[in-house]
Length: 278
Ligand code: PLP
Image (cartoon, rainbow, N blue to C red; front, side, top):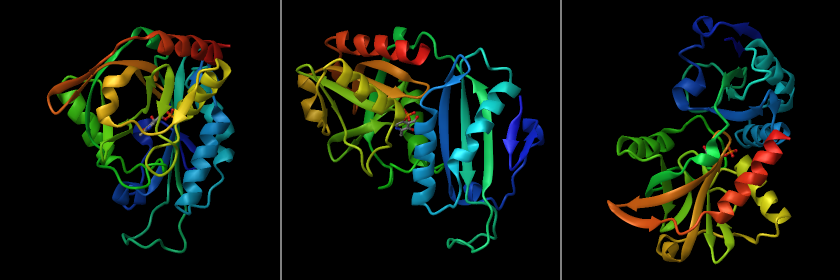
């Protein structure tokens, strides 16, 4: 496999960045993960648009769309044209003597590589999850490489034998540690509104599109943990997660939710498979 680093294609063990890279020292960088179904990028423009938004928000001058060709080149170089894969992109603010303020002259560090990923068979999975306090910062819309709170949340779940951690802020579910979150209540799909409290998931947006096409009502409103008694189905979405139903939620060592149904989730999965495989 090969990685693209600052204009060069290198073997991973020959690709190095400075210890003074700001992504290393401060988590001062943005990342993006884009899926390639059978070699073809899915929602590639949307992923680059989100990358551009995030770079603009942290005032890193960089043209995200200049990476489109390199993404396909990464797939080609690793012979993933006929496989399922994803491309990881990371744009760091760059290398400079350590200081919180941003130096005037600094060049971005750009890393990009493809990796194989299993995208088939997700519809056969269900996840048992835990729910804990959302300890993240107040700009979760920025896909920052500073993922410590997400790592801590996910590790807490994995260490206890669960698949994911659903994050709760002031009693309301925001999203998963690395996934968007949906609830079905009385046949209506509920999900946290976009804004600073969640990442604007690309898969989330596609699921909302699918609901519109299927005449399923979507309400972008947060769901409170006390509302779980009224919830029939829960599912999470993400680039490599795709759409996975939640079978149970454990909160403070107590089971607070068990799935009632899976019919709506199944319908969305079916259409999602068609769209990603067409
Ligand atoms: N929310 C968080 C915190 C994430 O890290 C991710 C990405 O994996 C998502 C949601 C899902 O976003 P997307 O569908 O764009 O992959």
